[in-house]
Image: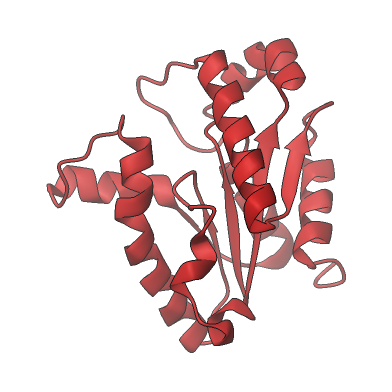
Length: 183
């Protein structure tokens, strides 16, 4: 099975992927690492500031990687803000039946109330270099992802109250249909 975890920056996609990896023994790929591979190797002129363009640059490569994993009957979690809401368009039904997706968003109220905590946990799994947190951008991006997910019928895990990774992982497992597998 392939699990896609999308959503805007700083919502905890990598932390959730790490938690699901621990619970289900499924490796994960951070699309931030793939992005940096392309940037550092010079295979793209895009920069770390080109998030929207990077999404559509990376996705065809990621889709082929996912297809290869499915063909080899391998499980993988793919996480990152570079998963487009129209991700299904790259796959036939044969592949789609082996895939699950959830996008994480944070409500405006949560972000306004907890922006200090969001900033404090920015490096909990990966070190972010020169990472400036703009609350208005995070609010806008979470809203855009929420709207795109509604249009594409993608489950959304919205964080509105507290950020408890165990509870978030439990909710994600329910949305992804993972309950009962190794639990």
